[in-house]
Image 1 (tube, helix red, strand yellow):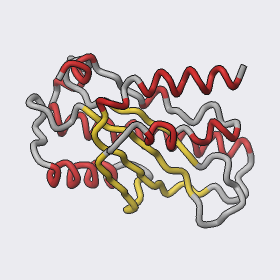
Image 2: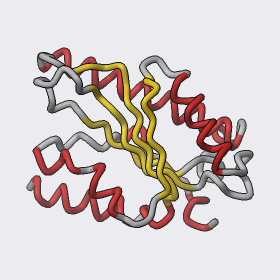
Image 3: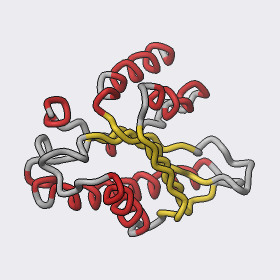
Length: 175
């Protein structure tokens, strides 16, 4: 059953991968060393909330109130995975978000340049509750990022994809 879920999840997410233009890794001040299951649940809730704050800020910077009022038209394409929940043995590890981002440098967006996008991503991330100044932004070259961000599924973490922080606006598919 888990094998089927892994396969179907990757297949579904890969349908959006061609529309993603940027790969983000966003580190958080949420350390997992010796975390109990209950503590890890709390840390994961914080990670989901922090990522939601980031996406809301980014969407607003890009599309203004349209991101809230008409999200199927004016919202970035965002595929999110929260990683690190299975590492409780390394003091240097913390929870982090991997994001495939698209529909951001479009005619409708207020963000017009790569440099402006990078600055807004940084500002939006650092304005969250647990955002750490450890941000990696790359231009996506192929669909391999989806496989990478879902790698914890191979180790049994079937909840690594943050569905509540995944947005697939219709406009992203028709731009």
